[in-house]
Image 1: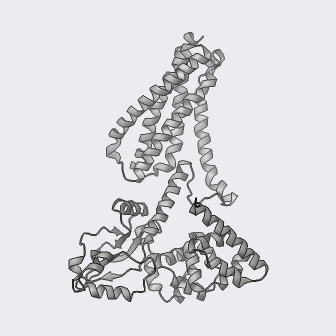
Image 2 (image 1 turned 180 degrees about the horizontal axis):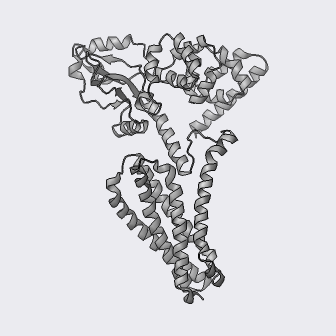
Image 3 (image 1 turned 120 degrees about the vertical axis):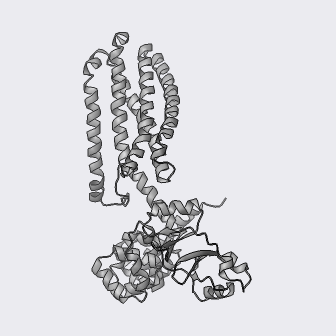
Length: 457
């Protein structure tokens, strides 16, 4: 049976790294470079990142311009900017000219302004990159590339194919060609297959589809990804406010966006506001980004402790309550987390809006009732068998039912309300939900115990 492909790639990278290090140790720099460049550009970047600084500084100046451009395109933005700073201005300009305009703009945007300005002044194709620098990275304008082939409505299929032959397209060239008029306004799209099978004398007007999905430069990258996924697009044209075609976003850029947005949402649910953090981040950066949220969690935990402190007397009379109070809060937290995850995902994908709140809450209430009754009966009966006290089992069952019901409502409402207030629902929801479910859970459980104290004792 064949080995899984990712495992084989890891083995290939590890064996190549060993070969590179051995060659460098022996002073055979050419062999080290040959081993590195045999890898796919994406694997090459992974291998390069694993090398120490001395090895990187030895290999980098000896890579040719196309290989260096491939390397910078595959490295993470910050890593690419760090590598670029070690190049001379002339070499950096040549490498940037070799890169796709959007990738070159990303590198320039992460460089110190003085370095970026000097590199731009030396570039031959700076006019393709400069327009991209004016758009924020996380917008359609920041994602687009200006490398595209455009057609005119009056051209024939034969003329269009001839234009493609002379365009010197990359291996991952376009499958769709966009049609513009004399004012550069987007008027249609032509599939490469339709162009090839058309009669050579047929005009582009008769082949093109005038209904084109497009994005404007200021649209958020998450909305771009959602649009391309919804309409199953491999590329998306970007226009300005007057409808003039400026560039195109390709599906490989959107894959990066989806990974970035997913990481961001997962981190924020865990109270991490910086999606650039990783397991390899410096300790000082990790502490600086993570500690404030732990302090906030401490405040909410202290509030829950204050709720418990109001029932100190009942613990002196029925000490066994201390054993089970965590069950109520914990199950409420679990139920809330489920609703919270569903709500945040629905908001991120545009599946839910403020107008849907009552329909969504009604559905979650029904779900919470069923879950609360099911868990309450099982746990209550189990506690009765364990402790021999049916009233303790009943109190725990009722508390679980009530807190799980509250939890699903809160877990659904808070992200929607935060979204309506233009706050990030993923970042703050978990803190608020935890505070509510813990405090309410303790209050319900200990309040019921206080009411039914004579039966418990």
